[in-house]
Image 1 (cartoon, rainbow, N blue to C red):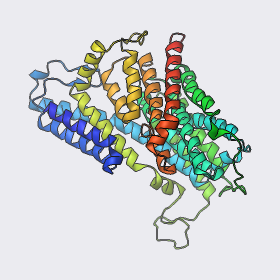
Image 2: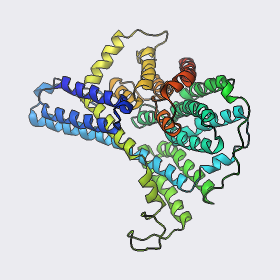
Image 3: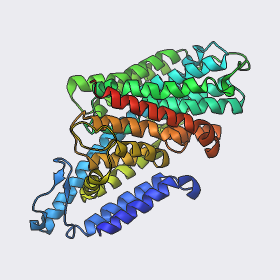
Image 4: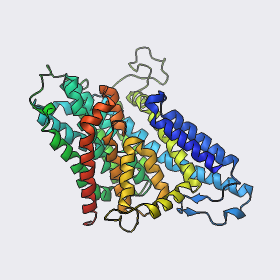
Length: 463
């Protein structure tokens, strides 16, 4: 039965990586392998020789002495534990996505465009590089990529020029997301899973992440694509709402306050995100000054377009497929973790993998293992890789291993356009070809990844 569950996971994983070939949204195989894996566990609950206690991070003692009812109870408790941990991540993401949609409802991101006055291609490259790096740390790398490419489309009309900027934005956004607990799904997973703290994440990863962005951008600034000036974009577009700038600052401020709230209250991050969402939503309702009724059809003159308020409209626009994908993949990985498969794999990996010159302090985990996670995240999704690492390794909070994993998984995906969520969304928005990206941007991302990794190996000996 255990072998069958592993086969189901491998087949589901393969379907996720071949999403574009199969033309099936990756959320479907993720949900299928989650449901089948847990169904097989339930059917074969009496046959498993070991069970992993996710709370104590160790195998359950005397599992063979438990009767059927006790094993079923253990399975249900484990399932509920993993669902609770997964729900923390999903509710957090729903809150963050809604705040971003509220900002967009008021056209708040047009404020960023108004700051760009230069027409030098090289200067615009650096401006968008730094914007992507810092904005992704606040609103996550996926959203930052969408926002900046949308602005870029209004600034640069030539798509052949624009896709070069899009490629560098992907690198910068993924680098920026690595050093912030809310900048990337994988760092959010590690943060909520109590593997990293926001303060230590910044201390260990800011410099490596910054170099991961700076070096490729510096090299790219000498390429022919970034020489000269852009064509005039014409008349400046005005924000659709006079409250755009206000909502931008309120929304970003609300998201930034979440780590601070967690630091003071020690409550899970999703509680702070819900508070931030409530605060932003209050101002959204006040600023919108729209008529809306308790029922959609109660007032024919209400300007709600089928929604009661800006908040309802924003909730309807969040990326629910992504939320369901995370649910499926995290719970599927939890199934393997519960059977002790990941624990056993980690032990085998650590025993047989050769070490690079320097080990992760106190962990004994090879640097090469972590670098392979980074390279692997370029080929397959980084979410299941990090989810697997949470079940494989038992190092304590803020151990260097978790910070290196956060860096590698967050930035390694830049090497291929399908290796990160920001890359996939840029691919869709600008119709960027896989091999064009590999030829022109992939080598820049690889250089940045290596430079940042070397910088981390150095800085971790200082702090």
